[in-house]
Image (cartoon, rainbow, N blue to C red; front, side):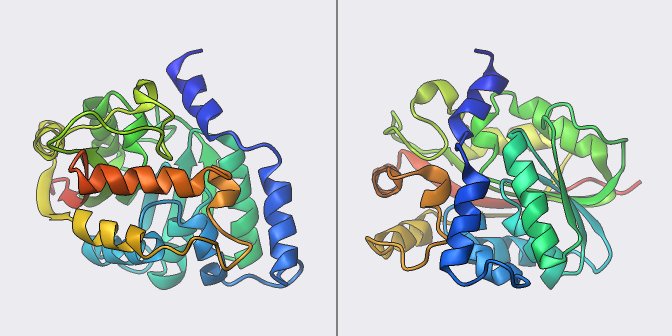
Length: 271
């Protein structure tokens, strides 16, 4: 199995759309128009969910009407947040085809200008300088060639464009305790240190605007998660019944400084 197929297999979730539609019926949302915020417990598929998305968007500071590329868009929650709250035009790509298809279905239900396609982050099907800004949350952990990823993002950004990143990074202690949501074992996990990501971004041509370690507040958030999900729309639909154990492993990794959580915003220099 090649690396691309390995990632797709890891995130495969049989009958996910059917299960989401069933959960929407259970929540009384089967036929009604959906507000993007009603989907947040499900489609903000990253640590700290919507608050982390809101913070990253505030750091990115997009203007209404600007175009944003969401790399590793998952089910499209952050893209819909950006479309609704910041009035941007968002295109999302994801390596997993059924994620892109479900993201389009949910965007249609919300009536927002966020569109998705299945594509590889290292071979993006866009011309150079296509987007005002780029965005990624919890995607690069599954991509071994970070320098190539950041060069590709630099290529598709307009001069002066900004790139917002929220990712899991390697901590001071090793090894990482598996399984975690992005990998069953080390064969699918490609973490870099804060120093290494900073260097890779500089080498790709970016200038750092801000960097924030959110490890402590993420650990606090994990410690406050309820044992049972109060809504039928929740991350266990995607991750599966092992969700509590996987989140517990993340908490242990953070507590023992095996991983770190960072929000970073960089810019492509203007012409």
